[in-house]
Image 1 (cartoon, rainbow, N blue to C red):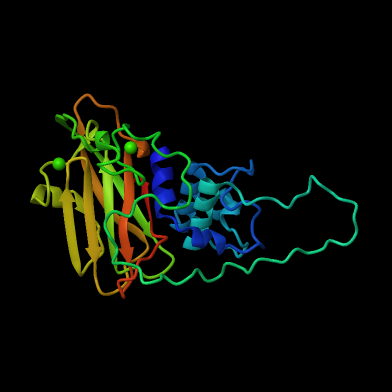
Image 2 (cartoon, protein in one colour; image 1 turned 30 degrees about the vertical axis):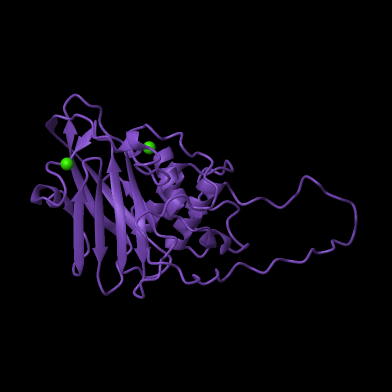
Length: 287
Ligand SMILES: [Ca+2]
Ligand SMILES: [Ca+2]
């Protein structure tokens, strides 16, 4: 699960997390109420958002108790997964003193500072400053993840031998962001010893394997044989939810690929004014 965790860590803006107000479920996304949120629970949150599961399966997915699970709740579920459950009120230290002198409350983190003259979104937005403690454990696992580049982790960009079988494996990539996005660049990276796409670069055999992209605008699909870059841009905002499906050939004799064997990494994400949107999220699921 480290791959998805890293992908989430890189693409999830901390500002959304800080924006979570206090009157909420004790730990958003903690379906079994064990005070931690697993990747599976984040997926459950996503499934409820996508109306594929009932809210009764995870009432804590609804962080503010309004009976709905919009994408902001899914982001909070992911926040619990990445950064742990929000700290509980400090009950274990009941001081008998009477007057609780309220410390100066920090201003609520409602509005993140405006992007101060950010340069145009470069395609190599690596290392987010929000401490990813699991860095580099995944270097060498064959999947290029959000905190890795072909420079920092060349092993995961090496194309492995693969003889395609007739077996196919499909993954779905779901997209979300806190506001309208008109251009997104996504790297769907995969273990090339388990999966392959026939052809390379933007050949028609590659393009045939990426389906379901939103209509209109421009589409670029480029297979590097360890990952496919998919760029979608248009004038109107891209819809949240399923962004595309991608079908692979399974390598002969290889184990069936799981969600750990792929990573959907946001390379860049911007709005209609070409301003970067920093909390874009790509989540991979199986059909
Ligand atoms: Ca890796
Ligand atoms: Ca290929």
